[in-house]
Amino acid sequence: MFTRVKTTPNSPRRSVQVVESSRVGATVKQKIVRYMGIALDDAEEAKLRTMAQEFIEQETLARLNGTSLFAVEALPRSAGRPARQTLESALAPEDVRLSEVQEVARRVEGPHEVLGHLYDYLGFDRVLGGEGGMRGATLLRDLVIARVMAPDSKRANARDLSMHYGREHSLDSLYRLMDRVHERLDDLKQVVLQATARLTGGTVQMMLFDVTTLYFESVAADELRAFGYSKDQKYHCTQVVLALATDEEGLPIGYELFAGNTAEVKTLIGCMQRWQLSLNVDKVSFVADRALCSRANLATLEQAPWQYVVAMPLRRSLKAHQQAQILRTALAAPIEVEGDLVWVREFDWEGRRLIVTYSSQRAHKDRADRQALIKRLQAKLGKVNAKVDPLTGEIKPPKANAQKLITNSGYLRYIEHADQAGVFVIDDDKIEADTAWDGLHAIVTNDRTASAGELLARYRRLWVIEESFRTIKHSLAVRPIYHFKPERIQAHIGICYLAFALARHAQQRIKLAQQAMSVERIRAALHGVQASILEHTKTHAKYRMPSVFSQDAARIYKAFGLKRDLAPSIDLR
Image (cartoon, rainbow, N blue to C red; front, side):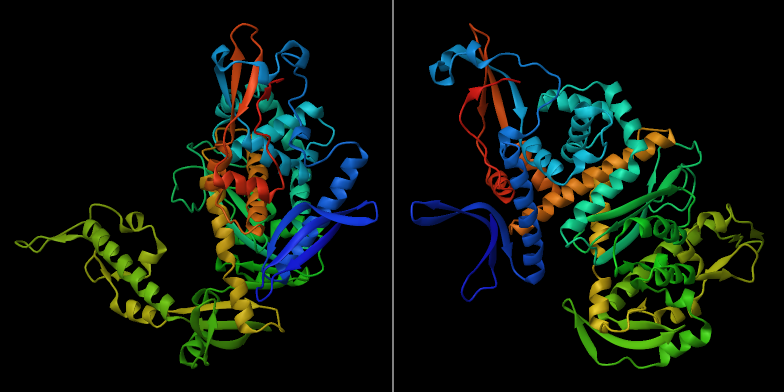
């Protein structure tokens, strides 16, 4: 077997295929064993070639063992469950009359045929190592697939696996599995990282980093759950802090979990101390938002040594005379960055490149955000300011402390005390000074070779990590978290991370076949791949009648090189 790339005249499309040659007499014939996808540029072609080489190695090894890795029939079945019937004990499907059978169950098969195949292909079945045996590996695969398809509590997962997939697992077995997962979290992270690195030739070129918070419907605190700054505005609830890193395509690189009172700016050093031992890379372009910008963090990245692009909060990081220099320096000619026209000017900041940009779109957004903030601030001040009696002139004290009601620092920078005690007013001078910064944004970097446009385009890839958090928090519903022991919480996050990795790799492979789909769309298509389980009314033999394919399901199966047998068969499960 070998990799072949076919091009189309007058088109950038390149079809990457795995081809096998065979000799028939004096003629050599070639057949396509696996269609990998369509590449539109060199980067996509390199990834498809890597996938093709992995396929050749895995398929060659599988053939030596006497089975084909990509045959649906070879997918692992639930271990330890005896067959309910044998082929000899049941009539052949063609000998069964329709009037003699009735449907007794409907089984969803698409998720395990596609996601189960991908799970093993990526090596996720190695997470537990030899612990738990085949039963433990199968149970973790089922739990991760259930998280992708219908994220819910472990109790609901056990019910869904039984009701929709015909896979019986007790709730106690799921909890025991979580304890084993907690013991092997480092192995889980390493397996996921290796799966991502294989698509990029064994290295990671770009790391997108960000932090979010996950709150609990509880006020009980411990060494992991704690009160802290909540990105969900749930300050009355305990929380944990989750740091995540992905590559430029959103494929996971690593994650770390911190106590809920950990400051966001301090998470980077904790992650780097662990990831430098795991990441076998010579050069990484690290990208993060301004919450991670601190001298300590930048020094840590430079010691790695990694190239970085980090947003800088100008007014927080620069001294007054440096801010004045930024405002009075004219920006250079505009450049186009991903369709947006921006004006750019470079400065030196402590031996690093400081790139300041101006965008009219950003300026419009800054003005709109400030006007909305001032409107809300005026409404709040009306509730807390002291009142003056119109008859006596006596000043009545405010009903509440303004510092408690105006909790947002964005509000506080626009108000000041008036002469009258207990009265707060909006400072117009502060608002006027704030308008001078509308549309301005800055990044700091130690990359001396890349152009400003390339660095800005790199920074704008942060939308990928933001979308990844939306996938984890909403599509995969990492919360609510129903566990309270720190070990179980960490295991739950690990299982959700494994589900995120599985979903992301599924999206990437489907995208490389030029069929980009959201997690929800993949979920709906695979859920529709079902089979009716029919029972013979006299012999009680069971038969499997596959359902028809949707177009999306057919595209997904094609992207993975899988074929589904639609012929009726005897059900041996």
